[in-house]
Amino acid sequence: MKPTMDIIEDHHVVLPELVEDVLKASFVEAADQEGRGTIDCQDVVKVVRRALGISIGAHDRDKIRRKAEILAGRGQLSVNAFITIMADTLTETTQWGNLKTDVSGYVGIDTLQEQIRKKVLKKGFEFNIIVVGRSGLGKSTLINTLFKASVSRRTCVKHEGDGDSQYKIPKTTEVKSVSHVLEEKGVRLRLTVTDTPGFGDHINNENCWQPILEYINQQYDKYLKEEQSIARKKYIPDTRVHCCLYFIPPTGHSLTALDAEFMKRLDKIVNIVPVIAKADTLTVEERITFKLKIKQELEKNGINIYPLSELEEEPDDVVSNNKIREMIPFAVVGSNVQHQINGRTIYGRKTQWGTVEVENRAHCEFPDLRDMLIRTHMQDLVDVTRLVHYENFRHQKLRSLDHRHHNGGLNGQVMDIENMNESSL
Ligand SMILES: Nc1nc2c(ncn2[C@@H]2O[C@H](COP(=O)(O)OP(=O)(O)OP(=O)(O)O)[C@@H](O)[C@H]2O)c(=O)[nH]1
Ligand SMILES: [Mg+2]
Image 1 (tube, rainbow, N blue to C red):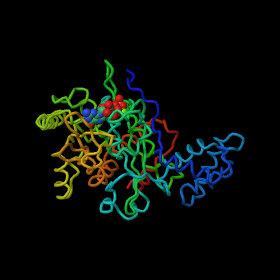
Image 2 (tube, rainbow, N blue to C red):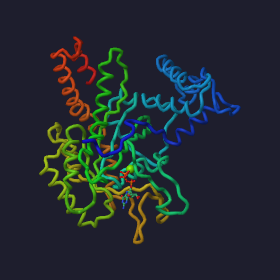
Image 3 (cartoon, protein in one colour):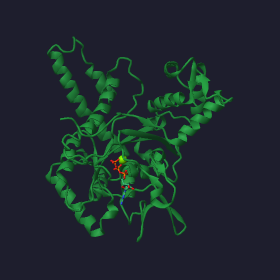
Image 4 (tube, helix red, strand yellow):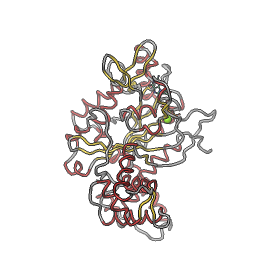
């Protein structure tokens, strides 16, 4: 049975508009002052260096030149081809030089300082989230909310008029990742959120989880291949998914069989954080009873959600994880529209009877979710992914290869297991 969901690309990085503007400006400034719209292929490294404001290693220089030669027509490179080259370069490294996204307000990544070692701090830090759930539950909207509406502007179509109808987010049709480099007090973080098309629109939703499982496993596989390659890179880009936000419809009843089935499959390969979507559609009482019901059903169905109790070592972990366990599933509200309330500018959803503020803890649990992801549990999510989910994948994959090897399938090639252990630490 073929999956019913339409996934076109596996990992396509969309550059934020702001970054694209900066790139276009440096293209003109560095090599195209006459405004021809193209530059000489030979100049490409100079322009990349100018745009990033950092020096580029010999290996990367060669790679950029090779890409430029492929994309150029008669030795001339267009601005769009240049942006494609930059998108590739930025995807492969956290060294985004001067290019970063301005986020309105404080994000909180500087608190990572307590969480991460100095070495990692200097290199930069990568964190990847995926959003999964039925169609129309507000996944794309929540991504925008997470980046304070300044990131995925590209996917919003602006309409005439005011209010919530001003920005319309189209239905998601392909898996798409948006990366942003954020910097706060010397801590550099590349946050990537992968948006996925919603499922559940079809009469037959059998195997609708397949494309998502495939995407997550593909990222593990990519990492494993890099680790095993003979000319292993000193730095392997990490696209492994550290956290999966699973959107539960706000029915107020119970977990549907489809959602339970989906999560049962996901929990073996990724950290799941369930959220109640569009929580503004439930009353306070409904929200409390629905949360309890979901918790019971997750347990009844044997679905393991993050944080996993088996991995708790320190008493401190138990305390902070218990706080998260109490809150899960987070009842969230998303919005990418700003409103003025008593002189304050807030992101929220305006209704005839008032405005739900997404950042107000009295209104919804979006701030608690964001704090958990970015301020308190980011390092732990990364560690669990690396030590549990990726290890499981690696173990199974190598075992199956080993099995094939014993059956003569690998042409006598021997795996360097010792080395792989060392590098994955
Ligand atoms: N009431 C309410 N509506 C929301 C919320 N978040 C998003 N919406 C609205 O729900 C509709 C769908 O939002 P999207 O963000 O496109 O949903 P999606 O899950 O990405 O949908 P697919 O791309 O089809 O999977 C839009 O009209 C949003 O304005 C929310 O928290 N509360
Ligand atoms: Mg969407």
